[in-house]
Every structure is written in structure tokens, then in C-alpha cells.
Image: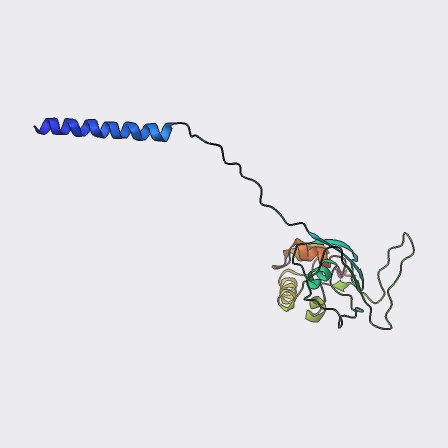
Length: 190
């Protein structure tokens, strides 16, 4: 009797496993699921002129603010009149921002084909700049300025402006914003 019971259990278990394999192995029915790319929002295009280092047309993400547009153009020049600018305002597509100069300061207007660096905008030598001078660069705050100073104290002077990317906290985006505002000088002995 026990052997018949074992045989019946074995046959039922075998049938169960056969049905399970058949269900798992059969071809699926229905339509295949097609994955579509995540929709991306159209960027906001703004035009920035006036007292910024790199005036021009910039594409910014939806929800960008005036501060984001000014940062994209390299921040304010020292001669910028910023007191009347609402940096927290949301910007709309197609806007133009003309950053005014302080009264009495005038922009340097180049003649066609001429590249001009304003006389009042001196390049900051990252090998000798003070904390305050480094903080005047767009995207460089007190912590990053201190890291630049510590880096040059530990590793010696920067040999090229590109070497500033080696400082923790300065990536390609920050470098792009400050590359036209910095320089390096190396002392040459007799």
C-alpha cells in the first residue's frame, strides 16, 4: 500500500512539474512592450548683454532664474550695477537681460575684428591671489577659494590655468566660467 501511495505521489509531482515547465517555457502572447525615451523639456533661450564677462545667447533648463543666466555668462563684472536686478526671478524663453554698468563706468566697445579686455578687469593670478580675489571669480565661494590656496601651498604653483581642475570642487563647468578671468605667472630665477 505504501508503494502505491509513493507511486501516485510521484506521478502527481511529475505532472505538476511538467505543467510548470510548459507554462514557463511557452511563447508569450500579446504585444511587446516598447520603451520610449524620457521626454526632455525644451530649454529656455536667453540673451545676456552688458556688464558680464561673456555676453551672448544661452540655453538654460526650464525653471531657471536670473542668477542662473548671469552665472552662465560668467557672473557680474566689477563695474556691474546689481542693486536693481532681481536674481531670484524666474526667466521666460526669449528674454534679453542687459546688465547695467555702475554710473560713470562705461563698457569698452571693440572695433570690428578687435578683441578687448577691459582695463578695469584684470586677470586674477591663481598662484598669488588672496582668498577675497579668488572669491570674486564666478562659481568660487569661500570654501573653494580656501581649497585653491591649500592646493598651491601643498603642490606648488599652478603651471597652467587648466591645472586648477585638479583642485577638489572645481570641475569642467566651473573652469569654463573662470578660464577667461584667470592667469598664472611663474617666477623665473636669474
